Image (cartoon, rainbow, N blue to C red; front, side, top):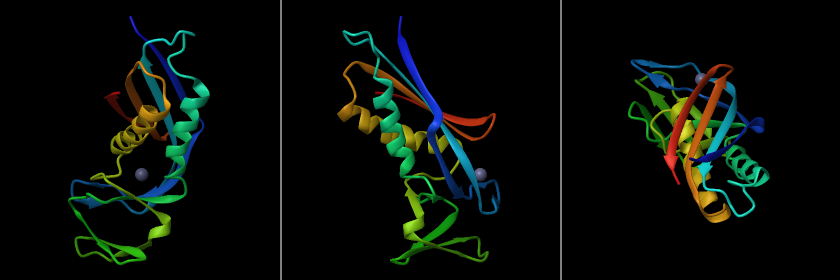
Length: 160
Ligand SMILES: [Zn+2]
């Protein structure tokens, strides 16, 4: 037997630009209004909570704020060439014209591609850190979904 809670959408969202790569292609630069969905599974506290909804929403919102109105850049890409030029990143794909992105507008993410699946994994990691320090004990697992457009989401699940 287990209990879980979910929080999603409303203010748990971020608007961001990106380009993902797949097969032999770099997507044109574009953006999404990403909606975030979070499930936390665990034992109940003495007051029969898994976790306070408002705390879970606040922690999720903090993670979303780090991505909001940013360009999401996959720093561990195996196909993009990314040069750190101090105040900006110079990004090139297979000799095509390069993009010059000011760092203040970039969320430099330790992921290999900006797919919804990897964004969900990234958010789950940041949220797990916050839950570890601010959440109640007894939490068992976390699932994060990132919906890049209605009806199209990538998910990641991890233990806590
Ligand atoms: Zn996209």
